Amino acid sequence: MGMTISQKILAAKSGASKVSAGDIVLADVDLAFANDITAPISIDFVKKLGVNVFDKRKIALIPDHFTPNKDISSANQCKIMRDFVKERDLPNYWESGEVGIEHALLPEQGYIKPGMLIVGADSHTCTHGALGAFATGMGSTDVGFAFATGKSWFKVPESIKFIYKGKRNRWVGGKDLILYTIGKIGVAGALYQSMEFTGDAIKELPMEDRLTMCNMAIEAGGKNGIIEPDEITIEYLKERNVKESDYTVFKSDSDAEYSKIIEINVNDIEPQVAFPHLPENAKGISEINDDIKIDQAFIGSCTNGRLSDLQEAAKVLKNNKVAKYVRLIIIPATVDVYKQAMKEGLFDIFMEAGAVISTPTCGPCLGGYMGILADGEVAISTSNRNFVGRMGSKKSFIYLSSPAVCAASAVAGKIISPDEVVK
Amino acid sequence: MKFKGKAWVYGDNVDTDVIIPARYLNTSDEKELAKHCMEDIDENFTKKIKKGDMIVAGYNFGSGSSREHAPIAIKASGISCVIAKSFARIFYRNSFNMGLPIFESIEAAENIKDGDEIEINADTGEIKNLTTGEVYKSTPIPDFMQELIQSNGLFGYAKKILNK
Ligand code: SF4
Image (cartoon, rainbow over all chains, first blue to last red; front, side, top):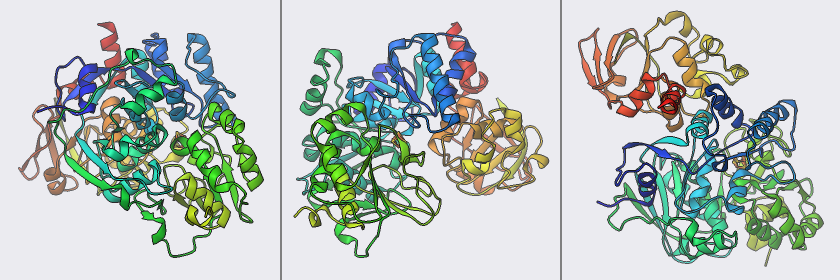
């Protein structure tokens, strides 16, 4: 019996020739990182042990959630990080003006490579599986342990293989594929398991859409999301000066065992909208018959705050205006995305339309700041979670969608298809 | 390793918010946390339990946030271990990391009544109900996790492997 790509990476990193689902391994980590909410506890773990970090180049500290700092306690959290970085002279740290959302920043800057074993003190660490790495989110103590020892323990997961067939329809991207998938299997549909995304439609899917899909593996309870490296992966890495000799490509064996194989016909998928209060409440845009009026639209987050997302939004917003009383908040996920969007003239389109553009941060995605919802308000968001109270008031409502649907809805003041705005 | 104590029984989906409410998260002092353990689901919890007692619960114990304060509060309250039909993934991980033993057993969770005397053999995963004489099976704790528990969690384990 062969191994899946996830199992192969865990085997290689724990020095075993073979691992099986259910085995527990202690494996060597290639990258461990934490953010301004989770890092202080990880740092405390290292300090209490009284040791050095295992390898300065293999840890990253990313103050992205509340920066520029929104209040005194978030400023204090960031200070703990910054002081530690200064004291230990750590290279992988980004200050405001350079920093972006961790899961957008790390791949963009060439830190993520195929075959790596990555742990992050943030549940959306699964994003990085898009490059053929094994990446999963953990608690701060786990990441503190990795900072100190270079190791982490894993229960080897079973895998579900998803095969996406056919051609994507207009306005359908990675976000729609993953919302549709979660809608099918539910928020605990992949509990403890690895979600392996395969098939012709994935082979044709751009890297940024793949990152979006793997980002939301956790929303189905998955331990990680993963896509085998291919031409698109190699090209993406080349653009970041990562050579093929710098990494190892793992692929699933043809006789690997899967707990389930799920085929999805992409021709059937239209732009998706997940209704409150769970990502599994996904519906095709044409199935929405009622007028769902919105108060706010948010385009950003580690799910959909990358350049192609902003380009997609700009296509819809060009020569259009945001509806009266609707706030459209656009947050490029990183400084590079910000610069490039500005160069391409996307900001002109956004501002002409009446949107506001913020510096890179998580901001409203987790109800932090920069666009909190009031009681009874309705938002459409390109982020990944629409739980009760996620973006502010416990009495608010969040719908999840792609940037195109989000932008179109901002223009119409209610949730609609981009086809109705861009004829 | 053996554990012995009285069982206190709860239902499905006991989430991290009732194990330790967010309003007490401004401290990580375990004695403080222990004082409020399970407060929102059972006001008398800290008064009635004795050292070594166990929590028995249904499906998806520890769902919700990734807060590590939840297993810390349970352990510091004097509870020796938790038996449930299933655990949420991050809670499962955090428990072993904090040195709190947990056992998955549908059989045990279905049959144990509030106040029953229970004895668990962690090596074999056998759960004995000393009150009724019944014996239940649970998934045995893998060697690696037993080592984590014996090291008093991930911190002790880190010390151990770094000294090697
Ligand atoms: S953008 Fe949202 S989901 Fe992503 S890391 Fe930030 S808070 Fe978490």
